[in-house]
Image 1 (cartoon, one colour):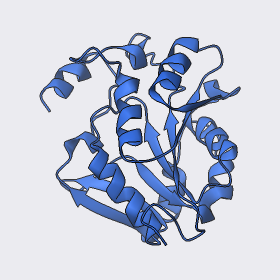
Image 2 (tube, one colour):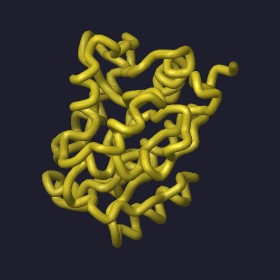
Image 3 (cartoon, one colour):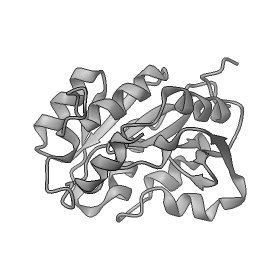
Image 4 (cartoon, one colour):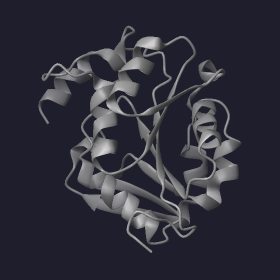
Length: 201
């Protein structure tokens, strides 16, 4: 069994959640450029791809700018008809689109600073048989979160806006944390003021 394969013999895939409206940011969040000119969502996608993962990005209907951006980066893009109901629905949609995968690395498109090596460590732990895996920084659990194939039905049943948090909480005893020195696992962009915090890392 190779490093990028899970117990089912199939590799895990990444689900990049890019269907939020970004209303607290004032709209257009995922397309907002960082210091190198590339958009926030482009950075998030690139790091997953650099980690060797196939990436399925979930966007909301009609959000062609984000869809086009992520397709150009190399993601498969799928539109979630009920994306407005929340992140849980978007994740369930993404898992349904990739139901044959060996597992899922769930990532957020507004977290542009996670290092590819961190993502690889999560993927490798999943491949080695971990049920649920997440990176942590200074004791705080971060993203992305890896789920084994056994959670497919639970993930597909998600509703509302809680994302995968409910699945993690129900299976707390099985969560493997990988402590690292990557503060990017905690850095998400909700408001424009978060950009200042981001630039200091």
